[in-house]
Structure formats: C-alpha cells, structure tokens
Length: 242
Image (cartoon, rainbow, N blue to C red):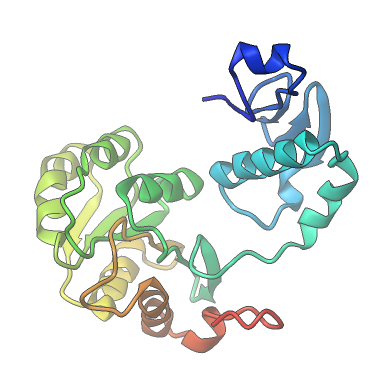
C-alpha cells in the first residue's frame, strides 16, 4: 500500500509537493530499519513501539512532517524516548517464565492478526473474543492456519462462534483451543497450555462491552488475573493517563 499527501497529477502541475511514505523513494521500513529513501535512519530495535504496523505509522508521521517543509531526520532520535499508550501490545511483566502482554485495545480481528505477527508461533497463547458486532473472523482463521500459535482461548459473547470456526484448524495444525467463561479462567487455560515458558497475549479482536465499561477496564482485569497491579498497568506517569 502507498499513501501520499496528494496523488492527483494536476496538483503536482500546480507546484504542490507530493510526499510518499511506505515507498522506497520515501519513508519506509526495510528489514528492521526505518529508511528515508536509500538511507538507513534508525534501527527499529531502539523503538519502544512494537509491531511493524507501528513502524509504518511512524513513517507516515515522518512523511507528514517532511511535507510541511521540516527535515524530520533530527527528530527521529526523540522517538526512542516515546512512551506508548497502555493497552496496545503493552508488555506488563513476567511471572514464572511467562510474559504477559496487554493488547486490550484490539477490537477487530485484523488487530489480533497484527498482534500475532509480533508474537508468532507455538510460544504464544492468545485470548480472543468479546462483544459480537458481526465481524468476519475468516482472515484471522487463515492467519492461524498458516502459522498457528501454541493456544487460542476464546471468551466473551462471540467466543463460541470463534471456537467453532477454529475447531477444524486446531485439529489439523495441532494447537490448543479452549473456551472460557471468565478472564481468570482464560488466563489459567493459557498458562496450562504454555507451561513454564511463552507469552500470554490478550488481543481480543472485539469490543469489551457489555462485560466491561471499556477496553481499559478489560486490560486492567487481565493484568489483575495475571497477578499484576491493574492500576500501574493502565497509567502513564506524568501524562495523567489512567
């Protein structure tokens, strides 16, 4: 996919500058580098933003700055100090060999796919499900079939439907598939599936209501069920975010 400030030829003819990102002649991601054309600007290992989708978002922001006539290269180093918002691929801690990741803001199946792209393979148990607003989980099922996680734990209103959609895939690719009736049960089933090593990933792919007030309350409940302080997980010191 390519995006630009404007792609209409008449605008360029009028002297309006076209600024591309996600393209090799503009800001883009190559391997694990943030690139400006052919120049490697920043190794993504220094970024506090997990996931390739976030790296592409950064390229979009840098392209927007450049479109304003400002050189963004000197600004890139400030991204290293950026503190991401809670509940989006937020690593909340580790206990007894298991890492817990709070991605409660994930409210579509494609957001859950992005989370699995960052935490792929048999070492991950993902918790999915919530309010059923009729979205198609076909793309998620295809992603799981191509690269299955260690376990999928379904929950919430659309949990049974997701479970049914994944049953044959789980049998064919041999990942653990379980249903749960509560966050505590979902976390426990994920722990049992992984044993003493791996990542327990809350990435529901669905809204939190009516069980929770919002995604933040759901993320805090996940942290509490995993044995962490829910208030610390949901806040950013100094920014008033709770």
